[in-house]
Image (cartoon, rainbow, N blue to C red; front, side, top):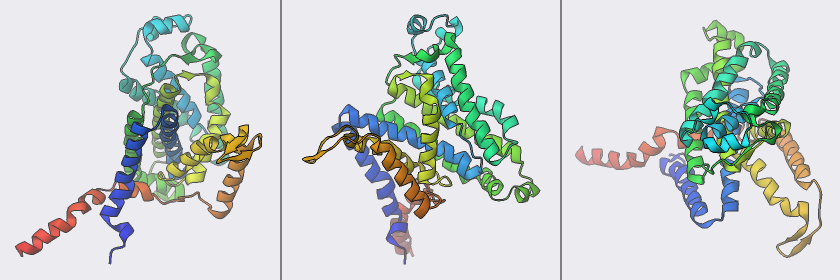
Amino acid sequence: MEKIKDKAIFKFITVVVIPLLILIVIETKMNDYYKTVVILLFINVILAAATNFTNGITGIFSLGTASFMAIGAYVGSLLTLPPDMKYSRIQGIPAFIAEIKLPFFAALLISGLFAAVFAGIIGIPILRAKGHYLAVITLGTVIVVKSLLDNLTSITNGSRGISGMEGYSTLPVTVLVTVLSLYVMYRIKTSSLGRGMIALKNDEDAAESLGISRLKVRLFSFMISAFFAGIGGCLWAHLQRSIAPSMFYLTETFMILEMSVLGGMESLSGAIPGAAIITFFPYLLSDFSTGGEIFGIKVPKINGITNIVMSVLFILVMIFRKGGIFRENDYIFDAMFSPDTYSGLFKKEHDDVLKKDV
């Protein structure tokens, strides 16, 4: 007998209908503050999933996601700002950059492509390294990118950053881009190429003996991860509407890594609980950080309470749930992106018609 959780109608309701209803309520009933937090959640899901794509699925322990996010944020911002605003805010900006003004979705795609090309250029030499050596090198890319953003003042405006972007990252737009991004990553993971990535992670020698090119597959994975990190960066820039190089440095690097590890690096679905914890906990604990009343109870000011709680939670997950909350399981996306979830809704009706015909 088929279990309830395995039924198509149950999967459809839990991963499609209920989330959609919640999003409709948020969009129509909530104020801008809560909408912004939810939008940030979806952007963080993209960043965490992009990290999982390399770190968990391919076995490349990369710490460079923030650098690709920065590239996407700056490229997307420069492509959507009006020319007169770029001339007035960025001294000495080249005319060929200042005169460009593209629609948001075109800028979003190009920002991802720029990040992917950058990953491809640096990936050819650095992906020959393994383990902690590769982790250190990719962390170095974060430092290099920040230095470039600080010093290319005629393009990036240096440490002052860029501001004045339109708020294109609305909730419907961000949800749409997030679902499409996750769908593409999931389809790649479940393809023959994705199985090659997993094979390389599990046993490189055995995978190469079957004709899988270690460098080509790892480079492809690295570039795909960078592409979606760049898209996440572009969305983030048009949510915050003001960016600076310091926003894409070590703090952001380790925050993305925390989301990936908490949810489960080997699972794309793990990006959701990991991002939810890192996104919502600081807001939930903000009253404890500043002091005040919570449900009528006076709470004293506790400096650094957010970092303390997050650290304890991280340690507990690592001790009692090794591999993260979802480990290697893709519960959510296996249901959301499976054709059986949708075709199964009409299966019983179709079977009844066949029985009547017989």
